[in-house]
Length: 197
Image (cartoon, rainbow, N blue to C red; front, side, top):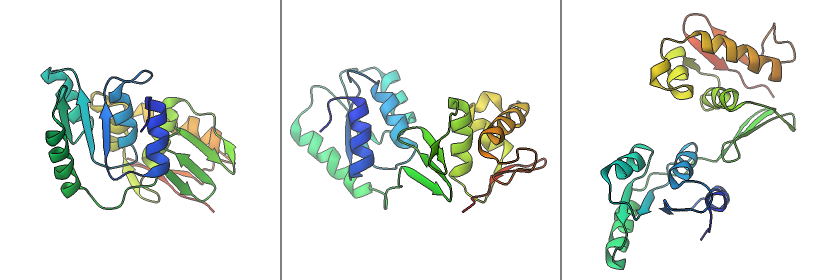
């Protein structure tokens, strides 16, 4: 049990639960923010509890990665039945919220990157750019995929964003930004993060 969104995120990351019941009415973060952050690294089934009976709120929760929702007040038998359904549909092992790529470590729960043990001072956009690459180590991530995941579907024609942020990231993680060893450009296609030991 956790009394706040931040506590819940820490508990979810450390305990790796089989299932999460998430109340949208939290004292610190919005329930939707907690949901989105858990979804960055885990496919654990999440049941939303809400006092709101509006379709907009339910749709927003489901679109953000919730598996089901229950409107308050509810009966305990209904809650238990919905939990049994989620447990039956539960996917395989959960993903670790920490990505280790040689000397580069990304903590998806804390939104933090470290290189050789030193915390990287990254903007939110730089972090998200690096995170998308880190989730596909050694593989090409297309320009379209990067633009969609970092900036959203409205930015698919803004490929200059990629050049700008790749250059900024290289200044922070490459020994020689002019001769990158981590973030490799695949001309006309996208970028690739090449893990180094």
